Each structure stands twice: as C-alpha cells, then as structure tokens.
Length: 247
Length: 308
Figure 1 (cartoon, rainbow over the protein chains, first blue to last red):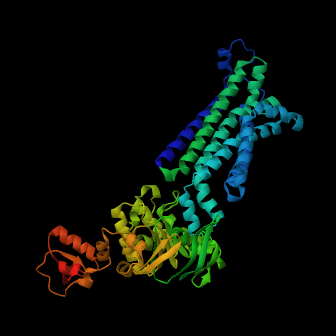
Figure 2: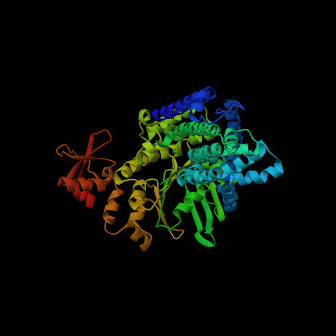
Figure 3: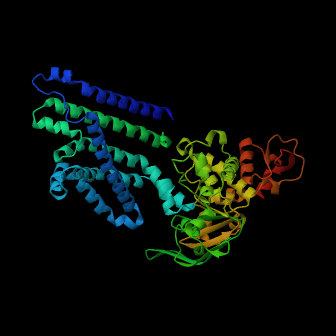
C-alpha cells in the first residue's frame, strides 16, 4: 500500500471504530437522553435493537445499490458501444427521470401495487440511485484517452478485451465515484423506507416524529449520519487504490 | 511482404485513394510522405485494417488481409502512433507485454522479452520497469510505445508520425535508434511522416504521395538527384536542397584514404556530409579526419570533396 492508501484506510477504520462505539453506547445511553429531554417518558428507543436497525438499513441500501449498479453500469456500457449509441439520449432521459421523481412519490405509487414492506422501498431506492451511476459510467468511458483506445485496437485487442482490460479499468474511478454518490444518498433516503413499513434506521425517526419524541429522532439521525460517514470513507479508501496510477 | 493491388478508398462518396499499387519488400524501411490530406495515414491504417479499403486487394505475407481476423492480423503487425497511446493504468513492463500476453506467452518468455526490448530501446529497466506512463518524458513514452509495438516480434512495424510530437533533440536520437533497430532486426517498417529530413534520414525507400496517388517512389538518393516533377522538387525544398543532398551521402564514401593524423577533429565514416560540413563551418577549417566506429583514423575529408 502507498502512503495515501494507508491514510485513507486508516481514516475508514477510525470512522468504523467510532461508529461501533456509538452503536455499543446507544443502548446504555438512557440516562443521558433522560437528562437531555426530561419531558419525555421513554427517552430511549427500545422497540428493536439498534444493531438490527443498522443491519436492516444496510441490507436495504446494499441490495438496492447493487441493482442500480448492475443496471446503471450495463446501460452506460451499452450506450457507449457503436451498436448502442443511438439509445444514449433515451437512457439518459430515463435515468434522469428516476432521479427527478422524489422517492416519497415512488413509495406512494409503489405501495398500492406491491404492498407495504421491503420491496417498495427497495424499488424506490434503486430507481433513485440509478442516475449518478449511469451518468458516471458514460462519463468514465468517454474519458478514456482516444489514443489508448486506438493503440489497443491497433495492436490486436478485440473490442471485448479493450473494454475489459483498458476502458473499464480506466473508467473505474469515475464509475465508483458515481456508485459512492448513489450509495451515500441512498443511506439518507433509506430512512424514508420506514414510512411504508420496512425496517430501517428511519423507524425510530418516524415513530419519534409521530409521537413527538425528539430523543428517538436524534438516535436514528445519529446512526444514519455515522453510517453515511463510514461508508463514504470506505469508498474513499477504494478510490485511492484505484487511482494509484494517476498520482 | 505487403502488397497493395489497385486499392481504392472512399469515405462518404469522397475518393481519397485511387488505384494505388505499392509493394513493400521484406526488410524495407518504407517512408510514406506527403502533405496533409495526401492519404498517407489512410494507407498505413488500411494495412492493419483499422481502416477497411473499399476496392482492390491488400496482401500481407502473401495472403489477402481479409483472410485474417483483424486482431490476428494486428498481433502480427506492430503499431506505433504519434500520440503513443500507452495504457496509463499499466506499468511500463505491462504495457510492453500487452501483445505477448494476448498471444498467451508464458511468464518466463515475457520477462525475457521485456528485458531485451528495454535494452534495445535504451530504457533503464531498473528505473522504468515498474513506472507508470505519466512518470516518463515524451521521448521515454515513445520508446516504450515502440517497444510495445515490437514486443511479439511482428513481421512488420507500422509507424504513424511516431516522433512528430517530440522536441528536435529527442526526435533526433529516436531517429538514430530507429535506424539502428532496423539494421539490427531487419524488420519491414512502413513509416508515415510529413518531415522530408526525417524521410531522407530513415528511409531505404521514400514514397511521395499527393491527393491519394503515388507521385514518386525511390531511394533517398534517386529522389534527390532525379525528382519526378515540380511537386517533388517543391516538397524537397529550395533553400536547403543542397544540404539535403549532403544528408544522404556519408563521409566514408567521399573521404580520401590518406593519413589524417595532423588534423585534430574527426567525424565518423557513417556520418553524413551534412554533419561534416556543419563541423567544418563551426571549426573554421577545410579538412576533417574520418574514423571508423572503433575510433581508428581511416581517412581525410576535404571541403572540396564535399562540394564536388
């Protein structure tokens, strides 16, 4: 590992340790919240363990982002090939629509069709996360130096080899930056999933907002924020490694 | 080695090459030269099928090029371009090893080949083997580009203005390297340039092109002594035509086999008369010693012998 890589991994591990400490301390922080908000009867959210909420939240974001990544990268590759060039405008418009459509609206529309729970939230998150990934895949592939492409073909790579060995590795930092944006936004947005009955870190916040319990809202928000920071620094560490050849 | 039979190329109904016939023999250093739009790069890129010809037949090693899959053909033909096109995410050794890897060579053979090529191109392996392209100068990058083109020991090397973007000093030394590499390996080289001095310096045969047609195909000496028409004369230049004449003659061929021990300064046998004249003017002298490649004096060169 190079020095910037070690530093980035170090920052990620520190954030992870901090988040773990927060997660371990929260269930024991009843007295603290009782002092902060003396007007509340039950200042600490105890309906579900915080660890379960974090894992459910992560699972929701991870699966939705995986789908968005597979679809977004595949679409981005397709429209930058000679055979798919004419679909580019269409794909860009569709993914932009997914982004403009507020997740709340997707949830509201999805519930009557597929019911409450995990799946409407999954769908809304995947749609919402598509645009940055698709756009960055296109930008990354278009940013490959034309000379590298010409040389690759000229010395005997097939189009597939050129994509796999040259174009995708060169575009990888930009594509991953898109995934990072998508996932980071997704971690915040996934809190909304609890409005349609999915379990997430939004659950204490929704319950807290309904019951006027600011302690619950704060506990959920602390964990969502912490999680976003940990994941973001994790991406930063991977990106530093991927950009090794540019330094 | 390469044969163009009545080749025509049209782009969107515009004919850029018409009825081209050209044979490049094995071991030739064939330089295609012409003004921009003369079709020289198109001709080069038709050989490895980066551009497909519209009519006629191109043969490579006796076979029509369309009987090969494009990537199979290209792996047998080295390709170096002005913009170099090194893969920025790969180290120098990985770049050089590209085609051998595509061909499935074993690791030991690839290792040996990388070392051999870095030595051939004058690249310090200890310093550059694991460097990334952005850490190299333009000249070093093009050396790696040429090494990559030569890696799988191709039958033919295609070079599209490979030194066009380099500063004069670097260009000069790479031209000298190319001459040496051609002499050492005996590769068939097809080289595109718009620089007549470069063409005269490198070519065993110069093919002058204008508007997609061959105007003259001759050795540098023939070209200078018997230009086919005004276009060629124009292209050879007026002001320094005499110097170009000197650039294709060697000191060894014009020296007197006399003792030159009394003359302090010397040139080498294979140096051009142009260089010798330049030294004479700079040193304010009318005579130079001539030595062979080992530094032994073999003759005497007089100003009068250069001019006549």
